[in-house]
Structure formats: C-alpha cells, structure tokens
Image (cartoon, rainbow over all chains, first blue to last red; front, side):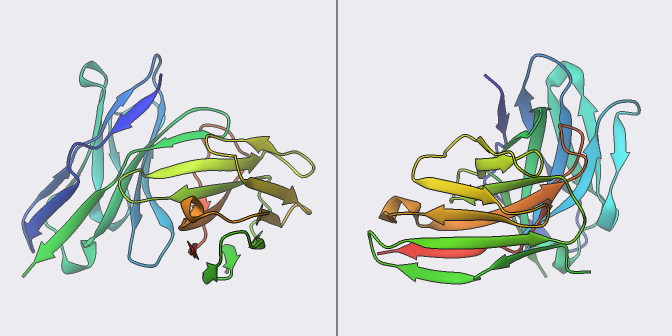
Length: 112
Length: 114
C-alpha cells in the first residue's frame, strides 16, 4: 500500500538557521511529489512539486526539495528561515487520478 | 482572484443535525475534492469529482454525501452529524485533474459536533 511518512511531528528552529523537513514515501513507481504549507487558519498552499527530470526542484518562498529514488525520500530545505515560515508543512504523493496521499504534517516553530 | 471559496468558516452542530458545506471555485477547474483534516492524520479524501456530473468515493466517505451542482460548485452534506465528524473540512480543485495536477485549497470549514 502507498504511504507517506513525515518522521518529525514538530521542529523548532532559530530564525536565520537552516531547515530540513523529511518525507519518505512508499510507492511502486516514481510518484508525483508535492510539498504544501499551511499557515494557521488557512488552506494549504503549494510550495513545490516534482514529476521527473532534475531531482532538485525549486519552489516559492526560497524552499527547495531533493528527490532521492534510492532512499524513497523527498526532503524539503530552506537555507535561512524567517519568522514567517512558522507553519505546518505537508508532503504529498499523487499516484493515480485523484488519489493524493498526505503525510501527517510537520509543525515548524521559529524562535527569535 | 478568489480561488476556492468555502462557506461557512465555522459551524457547531448537535449530534443528529444535518448541514451542507458549500464550495465554489472560479478557476474553471474540472476536478474538485473534499478532504477532512484531523490532528496527526494529515488530510484524508472524502469524495471527489473528476468532472461536472461525476462523483466518486475517497478514503473516508461514510456519513457524507456530495453534489457536483455545476462546474463551479461542489457541496458536502452531513445527513446526521456525529461527534466523529468533528474536523476541519477542506475543498480543493485542480485542472485538468489527475496525478500531476496540484490541488488548490479553500481556507477550510471548522466543524464541531457536540
């Protein structure tokens, strides 16, 4: 069965420090991979997506993610976080029509 | 540019009451979805509609019904609300639909069933 795992429920990071959020998936073929961000009281906003090609993809708000087939991972990174990056982040896999599988989410807290 | 609009934003129901959550999108998208979000569980698909006139069950359809009223609107109905349906509900749309099309989300409806 397909699955998406975000091992970290909660991460605290200092403003200006780097951030890496982990995502592992289980799927028979190369899936379509997404990262979304959810600010409090808001819906989910697409940060970036990977379908094929270059395994390092750039997204909005200075985020990037790297697809590693050998590790079944799609980790999200940002070199220097801002207080406005405090939010919940969701990794998602789409493996067939209409079937998006979301991870449980990682809550990011940014400290001064 | 409104995108995906959900109403109401908040709702409190008593067990057994019914209600309809409304969703409309102005992006001319073919596909629309209803998800529920519960702590520690991410988002789970309730129902989706690939195109106007079609609907299909998702992962957690029990206790819900949907109507794709037209291309813009996709409503979710709870006929007899239960405390287990306390959740945040998100409507989403995509175009042309399918695995490669990102979802566009509304801001959610927070539902409490007492």
